[in-house]
Length: 564
Image (tube, rainbow, N blue to C red):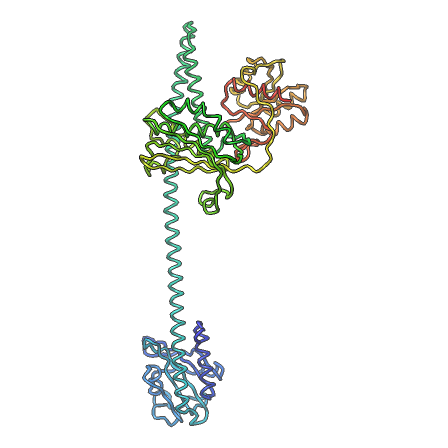
């Protein structure tokens, strides 16, 4: 009973034990249930007889013989209940009901809780008189005490389980409400961030478009008047367009959707090779110090983008030291454990650390939390786009790494960039691409230009013709394949990636089936396509991102055609 927590099992065990220890023929435990019209008692368990033995009789009431048990005032022990003056005096029955189990010896003890509550009574009977003695009474009082304790514990457990269930329900409701509130807050923050992002894009693009449109309008008016001195207007339009293209690239870097062409590289060699560029960018007031650890592991990253990261961080550090100071660039090997990796959604293991530290003005906590947000800047209006650190963050995360920012007002700032260690076999790189100044056609090569946008196709084709190439145009993959099937043998296929019906990658595959030696150059303004996966350019693919200038196009095309 001490171990039992099931109420039904407790009272049944008690009743069975009482019958066995008292020598009774049968026993019962009546559970005390009070009703509005008086005491009414429900049969809870029986021992020694089937339940049918009591089914035809009403429940016991607070008569003189039963009252001491149900009120808990004492024990009732009778050698012959039929002769007991307390029994059989209540209407409508007198004496033992017809069909009742033969009872002469009678013993009943109350079951009382520690708080004084009467749980009910244990009742035992025998067909022969004088079967229950004082020792039986004492034994059953002990059993009743154990039963009361066990019932108390069981009821307490039931209340605790009920409270626990209620608590779990309330906690679940609270968590649900909190999650809803947090989701609403996240949605609000997301919309605020989107608003800040779109507002920043609109502001910067409007400025750039104002320069482009204004410059071209002025050039058109001057040319209409017969004036040819329009170089400065054309240069202004080109500058505005280039700035817009740079902004787009930074946005793609922030969103981790820029196409990367990673290479295995020595970080020390790359950083060391940037010293002259950094010195020019930092100016005379900033002293550059490099602490490059020996034996730094190799990394696999896009070298141009990584150089941009170092330059971005260096320029930011310079701006944080308006009166001059010291900029330290460090490299070292590092490891990221399971806890840190879980916190920042990384793969635990070995990383190469690039740290850029300045002793400038530092950042307060409220600025530190927004440093990577797009278009957030503490610089004066017109002094920065607010995309530098967001571009760094996007590129590093796209490369499988992590960026951590540490800053203290009046002390300085450290930006730590973690890049995964490269374990594979280093691929041998081909010959470097020729520079733009030798990008013109050497042998009147033929280029098949496939682009579904008429304006882009016309510009691309005219640019290539201006470089001396023979150009054949196609508005889509079907037209391009038809021209090849009709006998066209181009030296290079220049195709957009995202086109209706058939992608550029599918077109290239079909063209290569017909012309195995064909060179292919892809172009796209968006990276979610068939040749860029997880942000990385597929091996053996060549890509020039839109928008591109004629010099970059010349270099790419010439480099591919001269490739052996």
